[in-house]
Amino acid sequence: MSDRLIHLLCATALAVPLMGLSPAHAVKPFFPRNPPETVEPAKPVKRKTMGPASHLPIALQEARKRLLAGKRVSYGELQALADAKDGIGAFKLAERIQTQGDPKLATDALHYFAIAAYEDRGYAVRHMMAILNNGSLELRPSHLESAEAALRRQARKGNEQAVEGLIRLYSEGRLFGDKRDELEALLASGAGKKNGDTAFKLAVLLLSDRDRTPEETERATRFLAIAEENGSIGMKAAAGNLLAQLQTKPTETTAEVQQ
Image 1 (cartoon, rainbow, N blue to C red):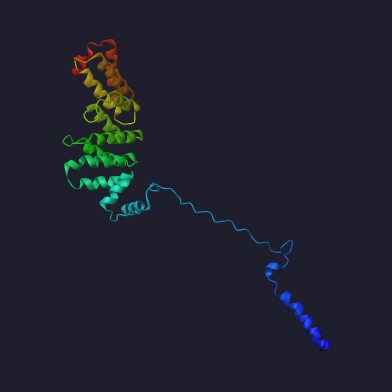
Image 2 (spheres, rainbow, N blue to C red):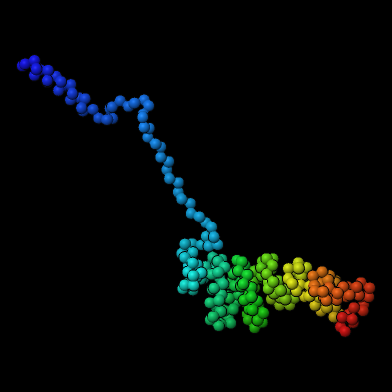
């Protein structure tokens, strides 16, 4: 074999092992020129929970959007919205109940109007009072309780109709029972424009009774003090005169009031 052929075979034998080395066996540099970037896992996107309907399931949110857009919403969807304490849904359901024209359903309409009012839909108070002032309707005790709670909430917010409605109903004692303390607190709050005048009328009503008790005379005195503080100009003067009479000549006050 010639020297040239032997030299060629040796060179080939040395090259084969080097070509068979995989990249994994290659020597890695101590300081890589381009170090691999560390990729942080993506954080889950949190859904925003803002808005009056954010507590509702997605299906009810969609129904509420249709309702606000004036599109068709089924009775069942309105019922679900109302039961989820959505004020708009409750109001619309109460209106739909009233369109049936059945007096037996008035108590249900009151219930849903009350939900609407409690959920800051003050315009529902007028509809509530229309039902509460109708003495021919049968209203469930539980619905009356929710109605009173809604009216009180609206009264604290300064809703004139709620204040005047509560004063009238508390004065009558027909639906909500004996609420004398609540009545005086409402009248003294000055939240309603007619509080002072109403207090004066109640005082006169008590003083006109010859058989009134000392406790009723004290109540009349408190009503007159409220009228003197919150009443119109004429009522303030009249209340002041009656208070003076009660303090100086309590036995003659009844006769003077009746004249």
